[in-house]
Length: 175
Image 1 (tube, rainbow, N blue to C red):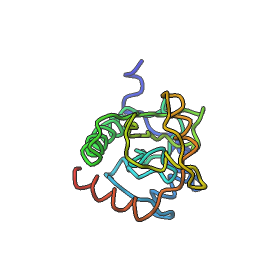
Image 2 (image 1 turned 45 degrees about the vertical axis):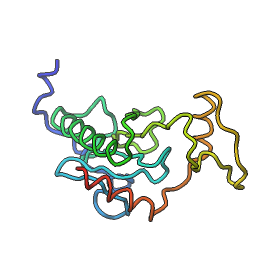
Image 3 (image 1 turned 180 degrees about the horizontal axis):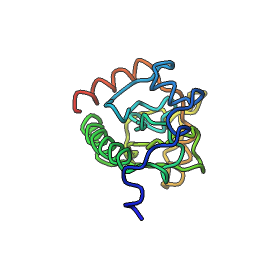
């Protein structure tokens, strides 16, 4: 079954979609904080991160479903995920990660992409956006992982360009 797909040609509608946000980033039509790039893959910081360092690894070929990735592109994405994950863990001094790829369900951009999300440091006493509401009132510390996840979701905000650039320098230095 796998051999039937080795060397197959990509369908034209997989190659690009001029309206796709990721295709526009790849074509330099939209800004992004680029961490890693080669001829097949790009890695950028997520503009609405769950946590600092939340990175997206995206094939440059427009493909909507991970189940339709040709082996050559899947291999390039896998290599990039591993390389970027390694540099991210070193830059953040946190080896705990979530790596996720959605297909249709919860896929906000219909272009294959993997999320590399540093895990929270549960029980940490360091201040963060997570511990504050939008009105800057202090929140109680979460008592369970479920509560932690809910607070993280509610605390999401757009990537600060300056913070993103500084983090990108630390990550790139380790690639």
